[in-house]
Structures are given as C-alpha cells and as structure tokens.
Image 1: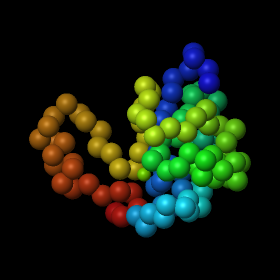
Image 2 (image 1 turned 180 degrees about the vertical axis):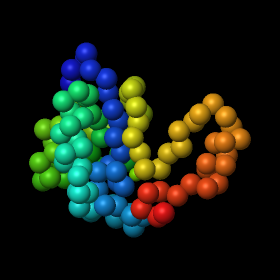
Image 3 (image 1 turned 90 degrees about the horizontal axis):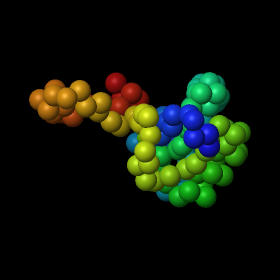
Length: 113
Ligand SMILES: [Mg+2]
C-alpha cells in the first residue's frame, strides 16, 4: 500500500467475476474477461482494495488462483476511506434526491439489461 496513491474500493461479485445473481457462499464465479487487464492498468496508479461481504480467506484464495493478488492491497468488508467505490449495484448520488429515487426505481445491473 502506497500512502501517496489514491485508493479504489472495488466490488468483487459482478465486477471482477461473472456473477449474475445466483449467490453461492462457498463458490466464487470465474474471473470476468478483461478483469485482469483492468486491475493491471489501475494498479499502476492506485491502491486497490477488494470490497466484498464474502469470506476473506476464500476471496484471497480466489485472487491467488486467478493471479490477480499482485494488484490488490487488501480485502475488506468495511467501507474504508477511498477515492472511489466501483460496484455493479450502486447509484451515483448527483445531489438530487428526486433523480436518485428515479434511479433506484429504474435500476438494473449491467448483466440484466
Ligand atoms: Mg456486486
């Protein structure tokens, strides 16, 4: 972890893997195509933490098996201080509550468009 770098908190399921809403506690789906290059690119400039509710040991094992552990500083289930949060299930608050309600009501994850 480089304290001079900004930190990105990146969600696991649906962002780095091919998860599509069939959660299995003891199985993490396959790495998503392009995820390796995505992390490799970002790791040159940012500290990257994985933000997941999954078991930390299972997650670290998955990172190692997919050879992406070298890009990751930490795995956490806590919303640590970060420059940005990258998640497949979030709404970016634009300061307008009405817009946000509309975005909540109309939300669909990228894999359900
Ligand atoms: Mg997710």
